[in-house]
Image (cartoon, rainbow, N blue to C red; front, side, top):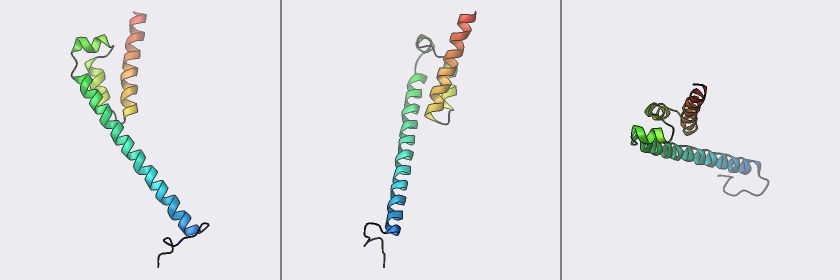
Length: 96
């Protein structure tokens, strides 16, 4: 009935099923890591959002940095936004 249940090594159909199962497993793992990473970033941004203006200034950030990062579509993009804003301010201070 189902040849994949009684497969022998070298059975092409069974190997394809095994490869497909591994592929789906990797996709699920990556999706879970992505969602988990987004949750971590959202938590971190929430922590930053709870800081006062002075506390943010002490670490080189502004309220706008946090708000812009909160609208990012990925954790990596949120980090890039914060670092880019901070770098622009540092360069502006040096040139002033």
